[in-house]
Image 1: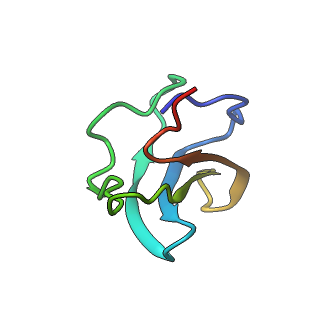
Image 2: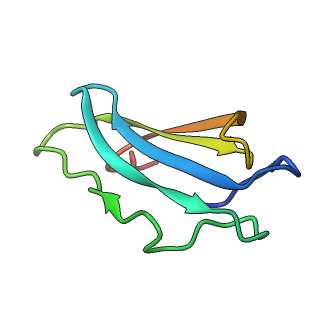
Amino acid sequence: ITLRNIPKDADIFKVKMVDIDNSYNHGGATVTYDGSDRIPVGALKNYKGPGPLMNMNPRYELRIRAIDGNGKVIAFGKTFKIYPPEHE
């Protein structure tokens, strides 16, 4: 996961993926900010990837909250994807 506009006071990120069409929580994780702009593969320990049924293209939303050392949410971001990706 590539991050942008990271607040200077960020201490941790809380990451969560939700299946919007099926109200299913795919989990995520709390990741300590290491100063880079990436959350590496394998960092989301409580994450279950998309697995839609055949002929379905559910919508998924990845939500990330930046949290400072006092536990306050200081930024929020999200992205939206359809899986599997539609072919052009």
